[in-house]
Length: 351
Image (cartoon, rainbow, N blue to C red; front, side):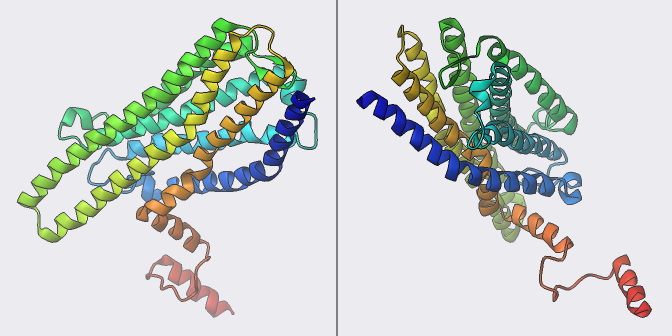
């Protein structure tokens, strides 16, 4: 009786979270991702060497636009993660859950969801590598930070993870309310290994190592500026460098926080597979742990826009410029003389 009550309680908690939290994830996440894409599509960010990167907006390097490609791709991937992951869950509130009703949907959704999660992490990791290259004193390293190389990396990362995650199309099955690897221990161990190593340890190590190397490069640059640059210019650049490191460390910290529940679930799921004849109560607990882990994971794409808006002054300026272009600002804003003035004068004369 107690076990049956446990299943009911977990199901009720999961329903309430789906009802109240996931719609908010969709609203704020999709709006944030779309605004990211709009800001990064602005000509000033695509064509100028300054403020190209989504996070650092590191200037003074002609190759810095390559960092934009990595984070633009990450923003697209964040949007796909929310659509593939959250929409089916919200849909199941008033309809039968397609993940446990259709085996084909269970396999495809699990496959695409895993790919989008991994892509978002590795795009951020490669953007950190790109930023390290931008701050390097070595010309050979800076030459890697270009658009051509960034496009190649994006395509290669997509192909690699499409292959690595393909086992989900084969071994995913439905048992009760659980869509996943249920009985195949080898497939589960393989999945646990690449999720923990490829989706957790390696990206985090790359981010931390790149952050330390960037800090070292910026410290060396600071010493050179003190020798050759004026005091005012040196202080201004130090402020930019400080913002770069601040945003970078904030990104790493939130990334680690958001992936910890998933790492815990992977370990829990692997251990569970060693237990024969798992009860329905055990499967319910496993499903609930997976649900909570995914709920926290979605916070990474949901909060990206708001974190970067709060921590990057350049990002806020470009966002404000976009809204100003549609007249969302006060009418007292002065407009510099241009061809637009002629159009306005002609319109006035007609009326």
